[in-house]
Image 1: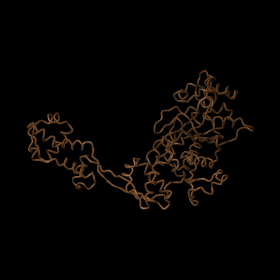
Image 2: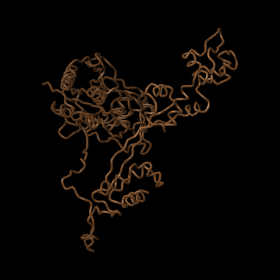
Image 3: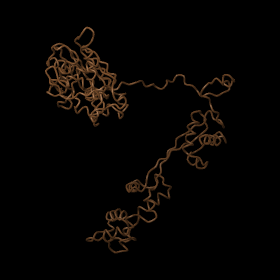
Length: 503
């Protein structure tokens, strides 16, 4: 279709050097061509200089459906007045039944405004007869129609009245006036965009017309990768923790056995967190292959009969429950493995500081502040004769480095730490205290089966990566930060994350 339009345009202009298409809209109608396709062909011809074009803009009115009804039957006020002249007087309900609700509503209001009718109790009574009034609306519409709907057919006041009643609509029509261009030819020869091997072999390149090349233009800017806001905050946290002397734990394995995720932490096999409605269990493979057998027996004994001053949980510890595979619910599953390796490494136990920042999974109901997966920041220190004061001091040092200086601690319960504390920080924007983490000292019932010396204590703390990221970037809904609904533009425009490090 576009090629046919190009041929028709060039043929029409070939009649004489002064030939011109005065207006493409009537010309397209005469040629029985689609005007939009004609405009597309003109733009293509303009690129090669075969034609020149001038834009033409014209405005005109069109009638709405209600206006056509008025042209035939008269305006609503005339219909209402005619009905009252015929009946003498009518109630509003009777008038609606006679002329219709829509006509009665519009016509009655305009008749009242023009003082053609009045109310007499519950009845409507005509003051004027049809011979005493004129249908100005119908007359204006006829004048507009007779003038081919041009914009200046009526005065502004009349036009505004018709627009107000939504009887007419102003339209803009764009077209072109077309002349020959500087490179006009009766027939368009297609120009090659590429120099091919076949052209070189045949020698056709010597006579082929080529599209002009712009050797100075720059190519389209290639967009590089962008770091997600979570990863920006994660990188800052890693740098701060490494400055504090912590080593990063290997956390690439998302699937863990229930033994490392729960049992090694002295969490009973009847604990509610181990139910399917709180944890994602793996269907295939459903069970792990093995765990360290000697350690397994010591953990089993601690659960069943106790030790280290504890009486245990007094239940039958089941291997099939311990071997179940799951998506880890916390990175503490990695912490337990690292502590076991620390206790059984060659040369014996040596004090250590570990941290991890990685993804964990919970079978939770998703809302503005909760997802089924999130990132956990965890840190631990294993050393001789540590106390609760060491834990508080370590936590205060870390949070001070990320800009949270006002902290409070509240006693709490965790299955594998005693004492345990919730960490609260003051949010200057919200002007309130908000929970930002959890902490505690690992219980002896957890540490003794690993083989750690009796006077070794392990302090640990953790928080989500999402919450400080949301605070840092002023994000209210966690689903705008992480997940399939994240807006990609936010990732590209998120500023660099920097925390003021106070020594």
